[in-house]
Length: 98
Image 1: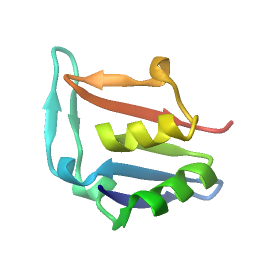
Image 2: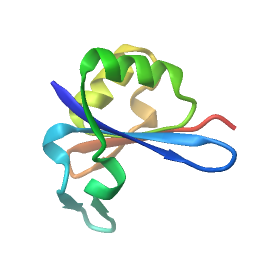
Image 3: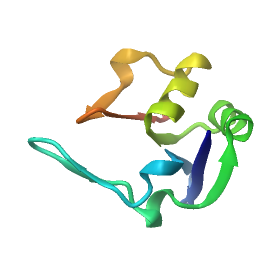
């Protein structure tokens, strides 16, 4: 499985956005919210599961979307089911260190 990873930096911190490769460019709309899995936000470097696992464990601020990246984050014990929001059947989670 492959993921797109993009880093967004600010003066004080940074966030890594990671999406399953097959979701880039899709819009998902449920009853209330529409989420755009945009190239601008998510499409950076294409990487494998090993690289994504390293980044998930090292980065303090993460925005992840997709069944495969969520499954990996759960496998690494970074999140659990109550941390996940679903847009239709697509899981999404944010992890932030304050």
